[in-house]
Amino acid sequence: QLQLVESGGGLVQAGGSLRLSCVASKSSSNYYAITWSRQAPGKDREWVSCISGSGGSTNYADSVKDRFTISRDHSKNAVYLQMDNLNPEDTGVYYCALSSAPWYPDCGSYLRLWGQGTQVTVSS
Image (tube, rainbow, N blue to C red; front, side, top):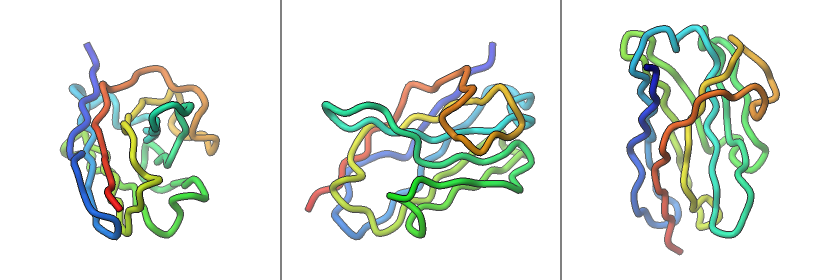
């Protein structure tokens, strides 16, 4: 059964960096786009970034553009989210999700499988 497992969250001071990982249990995931989303306390879940199955296309929410970088490594069935210059508004549980398509620029659409999430807390 295909599963996604996130890791890399933690507590960091404002201005710091974290690198999140999303590892799939099967290589079949490599064909599909992956989205990172986050949910802050009391707020709706919002997508942050997504990457195509090939890794050649990416998209970012305006709130993280130029601070976050998404990438993937097919040899490891992994997708990464490098988060730099973090601020307290980035605090939340971060989830990765597998799309039903190789690519769709609306990162929040066609998501069919979610990981359990990893907590990111940014202190001021």
